[in-house]
Length: 465
Ligand SMILES: Cc1cc2nc3c(=O)[nH]c(=O)nc-3n(C[C@H](O)[C@H](O)[C@H](O)COP(=O)(O)OP(=O)(O)OC[C@H]3O[C@@H](n4cnc5c(N)ncnc54)[C@H](O)[C@@H]3O)c2cc1C
Image 1 (cartoon, helix red, strand yellow):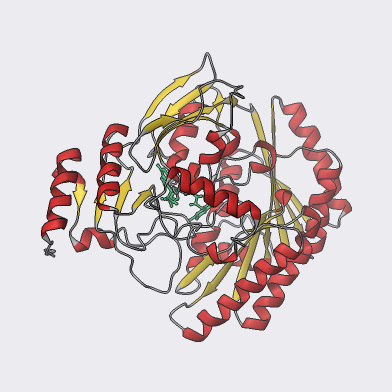
Image 2 (cartoon, rainbow, N blue to C red):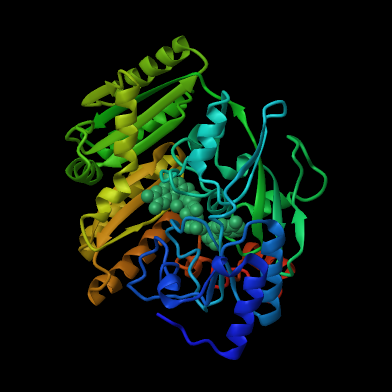
């Protein structure tokens, strides 16, 4: 469909084309439509950018940002577009910078245990490349097959292995960033220790594209664990599963993964992605241990089995080989896709509570679902107190939309009342901005930081703020 451009729009188009080449600027409606949403369910409104630009290096990104600054156009960085919070939609139009052409692993430095990558690299590709050399880059959002380094950095993504290894913030040594004026600078250094001034690297990790555009990242690597063992523990009460998680931690065991899924999640995964790995139960713990030798793995696994049985696990299954382990991981990572098949919309929420409040949080979610007539499949990184209810609903239905807003308000209020956070890994984006108390000192200081890096508010506007 040919779009009629004003003379100013034509001028911008020709400037952008002169930077990246005309094939790397999209501006027709059917192209823009593909970039008008991410994984946020927003009731089917369409937020179109004015242009999508595909740069191939930092210099081009800098020139694009300078044009945006000149015309006061929003800049929206975009990776795979899989975030749940509307983080990369163009609320007021503007320029989406899509990083699919900046997708190179630039260097894996085994002598110094670091790697340098462009933002469009897919996380799993990076993990595989590093693991092939005997090293490890742990951050593992469940959609690591598609999620990009840039998106994961901007949200400080993590995943099941966060319990033992932490997330993106723990591995990032240095970022090359383009600020709102188009200046290219580095936030840190490619060394393991560096306390020369404020930690700007960790400020940019998790900043959701609102402080600068990341054009390169340097990460630290760690040795790859030589052995892994995954196991499943089934329970007839969520409380028992949750108590078992706490007991595993108190016993000073160090599994790499301590995830929980509830009955609805088990049933839904088995319905749409049947593997037979999950049995009938109110709750299932997915536990993985890793280490340097088989002895260490066997010792940890049998101690974990004892703890789970002490808390009345109805069944305990150890994967016997690599094939069985992969089947379990496939089933676990299919959860979102499975729930998405239940109704027109699925909304994944994200809250963190102190680990000993998991049962309270799960009960509250069930109570709210009952009250508002909405179904949820609950899962979470239980070891970290990070709960993800996947709500299955139809957002075209006005009543359900209204009810869901009320449900969310109560959900986040309750998480906060337990001393928890409204997000552990998905970020704030558009959808959770209203839950931040912008008058609290912490957010007043954050806003001042935002104003330093982006005084005209062109970097990913409407996200966080
Ligand atoms: C099925 C499924 C499972 C998931 N599981 C997890 C999980 O286990 N753990 C977890 O943490 N998250 C999870 N997520 C959420 C999310 O997908 C991930 O956090 C992911 O890392 C986002 O990567 P992306 O490339 O899709 O980023 P996008 O969605 O494209 O972007 C995310 C944010 O990053 C910004 N951004 C992108 N590139 C840059 C850049 N170069 N510079 C500055 N800002 C940039 C965007 O503007 C946006 O604000 C899951 C999502 C799905 C759909």
